[in-house]
Structures are given as C-alpha cells and as structure tokens.
Image (cartoon, rainbow, N blue to C red; front, side, top):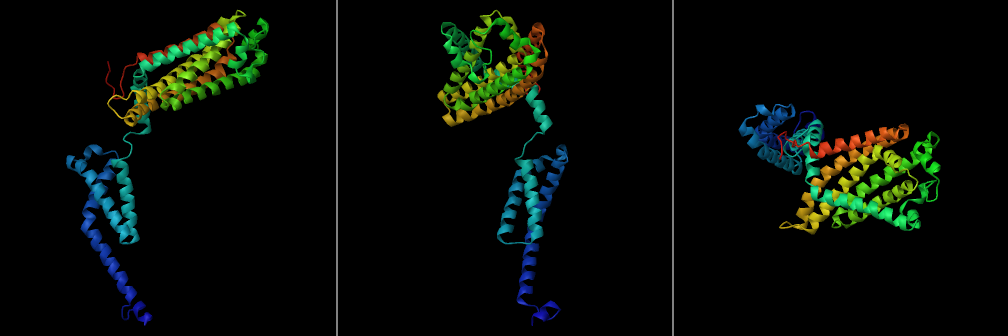
Length: 352
C-alpha cells in the first residue's frame, strides 16, 4: 500500500500531513509576507548607507515591523513551519535587530568622537576629583620624603626591595648617578623601568576599579604610590642628584603620573557619586558616574601605552638631562592643552 503513495497511487497519511504542512506554511507566509518584504527593503537601504532615502513613514514603521517579524518568527518556531521560512525569518530578524538596537556609529566614527572632544570633556567634568587627587599625590610625595628623612628604615618599607639594587640609603653619589647615565646599566634600568610601568599601570586600574567602595581605596593607593616616589626623591636629593633624577623620570613619568591622577579622579568620582547620590538612588548615581568614568579610563589606557613607549625607548636611549626634561614636559604640556584648552564637544560644536 505504501508503494501506491510513492508512485502515484492512493495518497498515504504521511503525504496528507506533508501537504497540509505545506499549505499551512504557504498561508502563513502569504498573510505576513507584505510586512516581511517591507522590513527587508528598509533594512537593505540602511545596510547600504542609503538611510536618507527612507521616508518618514518607513522610519516610524521600522520598530513596529521589527516586532511583527520577530513575532512571526516565534510563531513559525512553535508551529514547526518549513526550514526555508524559518531560516529567512531568523536572518531578517537578526539584520533588523542591528539596525534597531545595534551601535549607531562605526569604529572610525567612535574614535573621531572620542578624540574629538568626548574624552577631554569627560576629564574636565572630573575637576573636583582631579584637584583632590592631585592634592593627595603631592601629600603622599611629601609624606614619603619626610618619613625617610626622619628614619631611613622607612625607605625599605616604601620602596620595593626586589628592585632596590644600589638605590639604597648609604649608596655613593657615583653609584646612584650611574643608574641614571651609565650605559652599562641599561639592562638593569630596563628591568626597573618595566617594574615601574607595571606597578603604576596596576595602581591606575585599581584606583578606578575600587572607586565603588565610596572612594576610600583610591585615596590610600594614591598616597601609598607617591610616598614611594617621595622616598626615592629624598635618596637622590641627599646626593645632589635631584635635577638628574627628575629628568630621568620625566620622559615617561609626566604621562604616567598624569594617567594615575586621572584614574584616581575617576575612582573618586564614582565613590563620591555613591556616597552623595542626591535625589537619585545609589545605583542610578553609580551607573551615571561609571559611564563617564569608563570614557575617562579608556583614555587612561592609551596614556599608559604611550608612557610605556616613552619608557621603553626614550628614557634608556637619551642620556642628556635637558633633553629628558624637554620630552617629558613637552608631553605634559600636550596633555594639559588637550584636556583643558581643547573645548570641542563630540558633536563638533564649542562648549563653554
């Protein structure tokens, strides 16, 4: 009996089921195909960059058409329609989702907006926290200096022992100067420079990441990190090498310390927003502050990469202290001009 159904004989139950499913799929498609076609046309124009050719009615209909087609896909899955219809609807819904909810700018557009004012504007909006972070860093440096000046044992508590080499209290002036200029010490300087960069990059990230604890950890990290700097400043100053040491540190230090300053301010901003949310809930305040701080930290990462390049190349190869100062403070001037004199907003209009 089955042979009749296969070769033109009397239809079988399975043939009837297949025919019914096909009719149901055709009817389902015919009833909704108009919306699918219209949505596909709109999406195709948007994907090809012809958004301006869309009519106002198409733009307004896009969200509703997307929901209608997504509903059709859901029904098609539940009723087990044919595979071709399911594949078509899945592809169309995915394409439409990117146009309705996906990113509105290209990578190049985002970079242009970011460097064209969004980053600098976000940093300027942290000016109270920047002032507080700067005061803490200066205070930490002074505290580190005074502690070691009062008791040299503090030096070994503030400066990591794995990288002390000859940079310890009691070292001769010649030994300390050799760490700044002697070409035979480049390998040791590279290790020490790599440590400083890794350490300071970690401090910058932690200053931001721990800001949610009402800003307390960033305060401590900023003071602790600059206390190390203060201790080393005291050591080289005690041998009359302050000018040369600051020059040696400046090539990358102006960029790296500025990055730490901004990261600390971002962490303080999140903590302050949570501690004093105003009329907003704590979650709302933290979310708003976090979005602004995230933009700032994206730039901080770029600053740290820049500092790493300056540290890996400039500081080890340039032996002239005046040249080191020129590069270091030239970079500082660049950052100051970009953040505080560059007032163009992301859309291209001037801000106050």
